[in-house]
Amino acid sequence: MAASKKPPSTSRPQAWLPALSLLIGLTLWALITRNPRVPAFILPSPADVWASFVRKLMDGTLFLHIGVTLAEVLGGLALGLVVATLLGYALAKSPAAEKLLSPYIVASQAVPVVAIAPLLIIWFGPGIFSKILICALIVFFPVLVNTVVGLRSVPADLRDLMHSLQATRLQSLALLEIPAALPVLFGGLRIGATLSVIGAVVGEYIGADRGLGFLIRLGDGSFDTALVFVAVFLLVGLALGLYGIVVGLEKQFLGWQGKG
Image: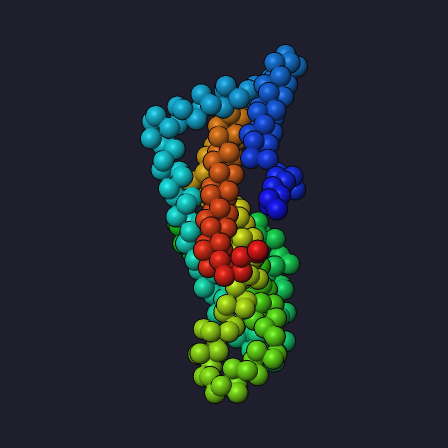
């Protein structure tokens, strides 16, 4: 008997749908800006935004601003990830430490970052380090929570198995806890990677002379809305790029979880 052909899957979105959605959005945007009641300083046309992008690209300043923001984002992401992971492991192993530190951890997230950012800039200066700290603060909480949840979600019977095999704490961490918690940890890293961009923009908007956040403030102050759009789109692209890298790493490290 001949094997029946498997019908094509219709549950996954078609690859061309994002491109179609983008095309529709650009068309609607262009049509709206053709209305004489919508001045360019309120909503620039796609052509104006593209022209502003090309100008900044050709004079070289765009590379400078992108490089500064990217350095702040990567530095803050790395710092927040390391601190949150180490502290999350300690809290997952010690409920007493969690009760002791939880008021401070929750308080650090209850205060908006726009309120903390001026203090950090005053304390550490307007340089790149204060922006890295702001990014790290935003990344810290989601990674911390996911680290604690991931480590505590390891099945008890697997822990008992490692104990019966007389595995050391380091062996249990490397062979059981980290692999079992990786899906949850990557979930926190996805959130942190996108939120880190917000931290860089907040810091640059409050006090900086370079970076995409500074570019937004510059365009806002001069009513150059096209420049603001350029910076915003670049920030979106930066966040999407970081998110895509995390997703790629997740597929690489969690390939053993492939669904059949």
